[in-house]
Image (cartoon, rainbow over the protein chains, first blue to last red):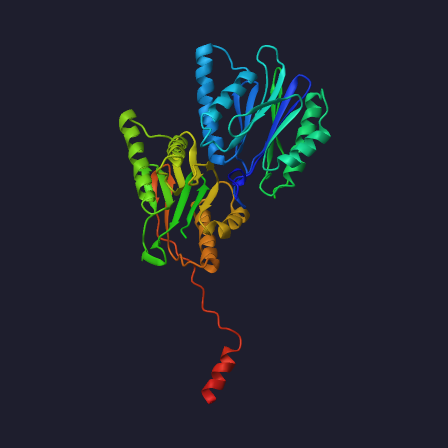
Amino acid sequence: MSIMAYNGAAIMAMKGKNCVAIAADTRFGIQAQTVSTKFQKIFELGPRLYIGLAGLATDVQTVSERLKFRVNLYELRENRRVKPKTLLSVVSNLLYERRFGPYFVEPVIAGLDDVTSEPFVASLDLIGCPMVTEDFVVSGTCSEQMYGMCESVWSPDLDPDQLFEAISQALLNAADRDAVSGWGAVVHIIEKDKVTTRTLKARMD
Amino acid sequence: MECLIGIRGKDFVLLASDSVAGRSVVAMKKDHDKMFQLSSKLLMAVTGEGGDTVQFAEYIAKNIQLYRMRNGYDLSTKAAASFTRRNLADYLRSSTPYMVNLLIGGHDDNDGADLYYMDYLGSMVNLPFAVHGYGSFFTLSIMDRYYKEDMTKEQTLALLQRCIDEIHERFIVNLNSFKVKIIDKDGIHVLKDIRPTTKPPVEAEGTQQQQQLMDTA
């Protein structure tokens, strides 16, 4: 029984033309039993900056709370919003501080730079190793399935509507091949002037 | 082997817990109350490691009361549940973690009735109905089928009765009595204990014939 597969999750983020998308399933389960179908795994840390957390549910909640605390202090000191690239370093630091007793989460970051509006996606492992990519990032119990789906549906410079279709199909079909992921899904499309949040009609099994 | 059930109804939360206090294979007490009052409109049902249950529940209850004394008003259900979660999560990685599973039910004027489910690791979720223990495997599907939003007290008690009957029918451990409490805008009300519905004994086929044969022999 792997700790990272105790609760189960499927999270991904994709880059588009002047936009990013981040999506996650909404299952909260304890091994084989599903307890809730409305569990939040994506958290807003700025008007155009979101973090998704896959892994052990208690650590998802703890890390999101502690991270929000750090980001709040940062914004009070610096008197400006945190940049996506900087958030990556903040999360990396938070996780590496617990190098020999880590939080069992694998975060995914998606956002637009506050000043330049440049799209940004990145992911980290549970001890804070950062990885920035130019296309997409995935995290969770069905990561292999998600890699396969993303590689197939993604292409560069998708507009927000095309990006929404791509990320939704990628997430739904990957999660359907994993027993502990799925049971509902939520997608956020982040553009320069607005964020659209949609819940997907998913297989509830 | 313990079971906690929580159901949210129209502006109230119903919490039920089995009343067996057991150690290993012995049922030491049959009318044990596993629910702790955190404040006038907050109730917490606990199961888990012996000792940890009472210690943790009393610790949380006293701290909730302290907040009340310091600030002059009660914590909301959501805040009290978050406080409890933070404590559980902090203790998880200490040398003395608390192995307790909880249901927190409460009512406040802003958010109405709320039910929170928390496992021993500190993952918390707000649910319309929740069950802890092996009983969950028998009852969650029944609740999926028959639960509706904004049920009345009578409907909720009927649903609870269905769940308890199923546990009695199929769970190998005998949980034949449940303590039931309701939290609504007027506070916490203790209801009568609920037992599984007694069914008339079923005579197996052929026993009458066998009895006749035995009598003549």
